[in-house]
Figure (cartoon, helix red, strand yellow):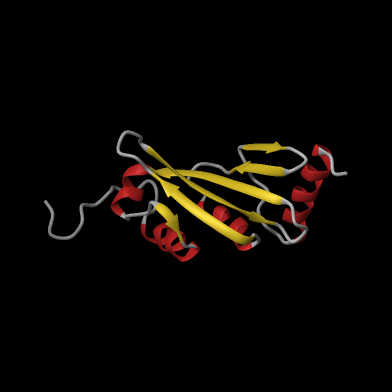
Length: 128
């Protein structure tokens, strides 16, 4: 029987062994699953964790009522443990990039490359 502490140790050891960043804002764990909330806008770390999940499903949401958008991925580590990974990003940029619903890791990486947080949000071509 796995305990919460066993799950915590397993996720931290996985991060160290595979050199996935171990920075996170919040870490919730039960015997059945772990939830990682990453530092705001750290899409590179989000992508690193997603690459380590089998059967990863990524969803993005950024409603017009919110200034922040959320990317959420869940899947299984090689051990079979369920891991949920969350990161917040700029909601306006996510909406402009049409990053919503079920998305691919490649779409997240493209969004990360083209939407550097801290730079001004540009209107789409042809819109003033």
